[in-house]
Length: 74
Image (cartoon, rainbow, N blue to C red; front, side, top):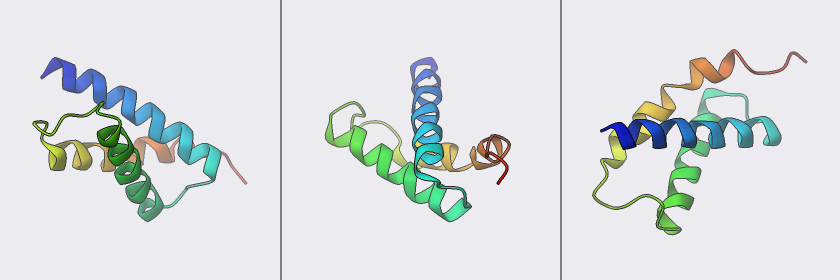
């Protein structure tokens, strides 16, 4: 379980950086980006099929409120 937590933080960082770079600032866009990043990592074999995919996706989607605090003011 510890490895999963570390991976989630790393993946959250990647999603956050991409969201800021791409101007992804809505909850729906965040959810789409989470799915895209996870799928990219699965295709690159960085996430194995034995990992609880739904749990990881839900945990990262729930971090939108954390990300919202980092959205730059327009």
